[in-house]
Image 1: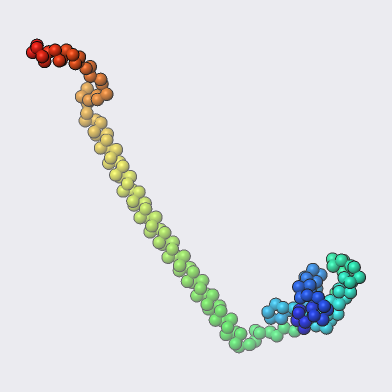
Image 2 (image 1 turned 45 degrees about the vertical axis):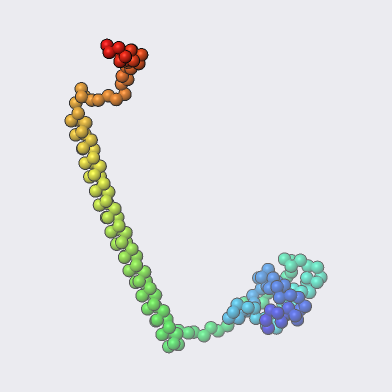
Length: 172
């Protein structure tokens, strides 16, 4: 019986049944979809819980007779040829996937190495250019003697404009 059928039978909601099972950690069977599948024993157990709750017992204080852990026979699928074939194919796919992943990582490492080498070559070229420029600056500084250095910040004294005017008028 499913959860909603048991809930109708007991007169509670489906979520109440689920809450009882979870909070009391009751061992209930589940179907292949993960839904609870209740047996007559399970329904009797839930009726005990409901009776205690009606009497005013708190849910955490409810005591039920725990049933034994269910045991069942699981059919071994190892001897099935179809299962063996599927497992073999899965293993082959996993090996191929691992090889492909290794190949991708190897390619990426080689690509990164090539990029690093290109960057190192570019840095070396830039260092050589810097050295050439520094050498040129040193040679330029050595060529100009210090006594021939031009100074542009020195102030030139200005001549008196009135004197120039008078001189130009009278031709002195």
